[in-house]
Length: 108
Image (cartoon, rainbow, N blue to C red; front, side, top):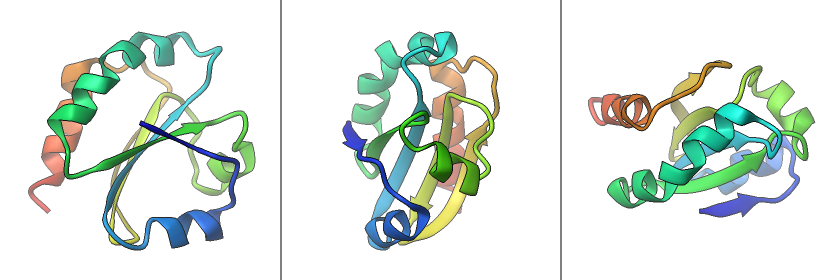
């Protein structure tokens, strides 16, 4: 999973303009983020159609605010520059919940 460097919404939108992306908003201090991190490589391997980008919420606090990401861990999916879904709240997320979210995007 690639780390997204500090960026702004306009630059991010340019980066996401072509292809499918899954943004993973996280922070080192977040216990619910640490809970899901060990299974992220498996989730990423199971969904090769997405390029996963890890977004450090603290480093990108302004971006998170602009994108209305109020809780972490959060996932936001993009296809060719358009947001196609989000799983964003402050709750702990299981591998199955994340996979169910990604599977729901395939319908679109």
